[in-house]
Image (cartoon, rainbow, N blue to C red; front, side, top):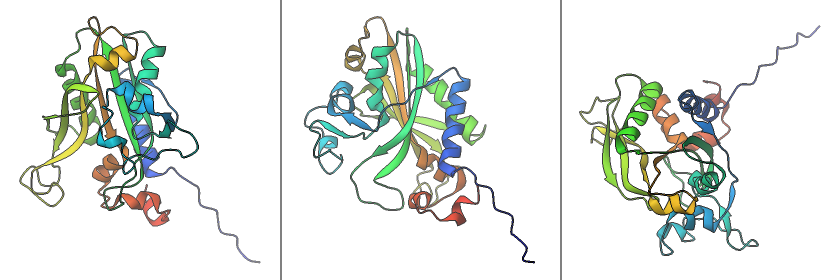
Length: 246
């Protein structure tokens, strides 16, 4: 009699695992999880977020516009949910929004036309960069370990002012320089900043009374760094040799 093989149990994809981990860190800090649609309006995706009409991100090379639905697109960031959320909630509040985003660009080891993203938003009274730094430092240590060293660099994003890029000291070389950090000693992790007053106004919030911070990070990139995956396309290949390791 032929012996039947026991069926293997399924398990979660690595991107699902790290998304749940990241969201769990923030919900433990009191953040609410808020989801938005993948098909968005030009207003929510760009206009409401203070993105200028001539900004390159609106170009066809970066955005998937829907041919038969004028003014609608596949969201390029989950920040598109930010202003609708503000309109539905009274501050103070804090939320994280995970989801899939789409950008029309060439694929390579570090870029895909679709990837997963998580954005955070906090609005309260007298919120400063110090609050942002403390929050992100706590998050990175929870995700990567207590020896994490981070830094802020000035950066421009239309929806925040001031804006910063957040780097983490390279965990492979300890800052001495290697191929993983392009010999800089630092690895870029996410973008962040204080919410622009125009964005607060568009959300129906008085910027003279309230302030806040926002941050966004690619889940795929976090997974690559945490587990040493060198090609983002592997997450979407369906290759069980990768998936079965998690």
